[in-house]
Image 1: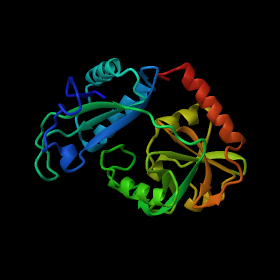
Image 2: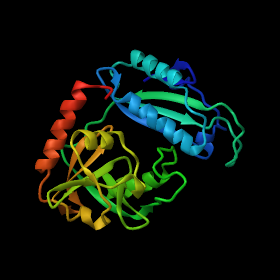
Image 3: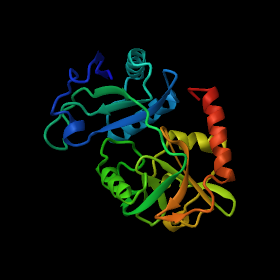
Image 4: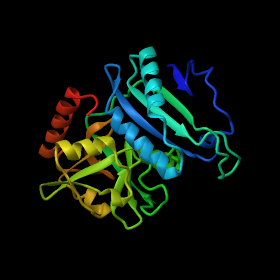
Length: 272
């Protein structure tokens, strides 16, 4: 697969970024992942809007929207069969520490195949928490070490996703997904104040299907009548078990309705 780095399309083994890039040394960067449908990055405008919000949250200069779109167009023209696309935007060359030098940001656009998710999935809760008061709460940064550790644990337990609470013990999010659940017939999802990422698929499900943003304890997930994950690669994926405990329905009626509506609306509009 080709990659696009700072305006240049090249083979992966020819692409170069500095070993002093702040994204490499201290994780000073943000990113977006889009699914690719028929050679088009789905919901690209929303993703670029969130990329800009995340960059602002880190104090990085605003990404050049036209330049990033050019990179997306060029790599998708070169790799029309790609299934997913990632835009990475870092602080550029910096010192071996947390200070910045004011160097130009680095922009990387890469594509790859889209893996197939199971029709339903198992999730595991983890003992570590999201800090809803963190300076980077809700930002999609390249600092993913917490997620790597948590996801590895979930995989060891036979799950495809790890679920975090926040420091208040409230349900928050997965390592790369948002969580919806049905309690007493009501579709709910944690609010952004919980520290969860403002997921693009989450946003569209709320707009298209309707869901209430409600603070609930982490334990509510195991008591849910239905539950599902959302992400740019999963779309709407029903959860069939939590920590080894089976949920009553996977998919249940509200999950099935959400999945069908998301498929219908997203299929009709690739940049909603």
